[in-house]
Image (cartoon, rainbow, N blue to C red; front, top):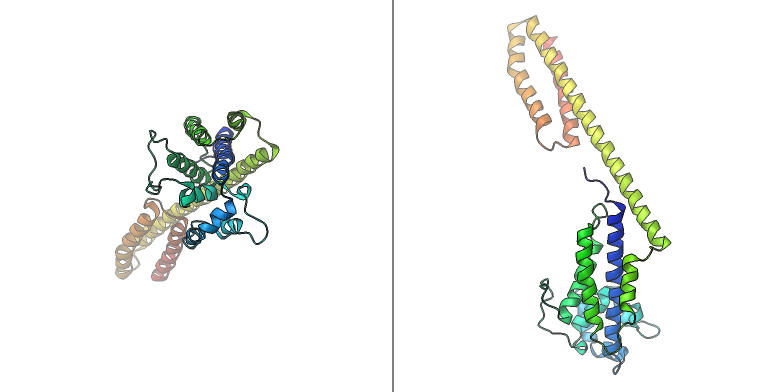
Length: 287
């Protein structure tokens, strides 16, 4: 049975999420801000409204994200953009000048260090980390490799602008080795507790199934003894023939139900019911 991942593996996952989401969002927002330094963001969004409407129609952006771009009150600001929305705008709007022929459906090879490839990596890792099971976490070797890949991508993207994010390396180092804030530690503890409870319930279900199997085996032994008794009594030829004709076939079916690979709990219950019905039918034939 799978057990909960060690606490360190959960910490690795949390730190990677923080690096990719927080630091990545910071760098990508800065890319948008610089490329909107001469043309206000509101103007860019107004000019490319048709493209953004199409993104909304195709569910590439959510209604919440769409409302951030065109708020009823005030003006849009990149400070409200999450990583997913920021990357979507960079890759979709002509104003930002990314390669329109770039294939966003293929993982870039390690040698591709283009702006598009690095944005793809941030998006890819964001999706990967968001769907990793907390019972698995991140192994140390994977943590080191993924961290290095993300860190390099962040520095390359940050070098593309005239006013890069200041102290980016320090921000990255703090994500990697700094103490977890109390809320983060509490969240990790909650996840650990949740997994332990889940495993406890699963263990209980397995024990119940094992008990059900043991009960079925006991019932089969009881039936076998009863059949032997009926054959020994030999009250009549018809009774003997009925027992010989019916009993082996039914027992064989019950045995197959019990021993068939990956037997489900519901089927164990079905075997027990069939055994009881069989006992009743045999008793009726005897008397």
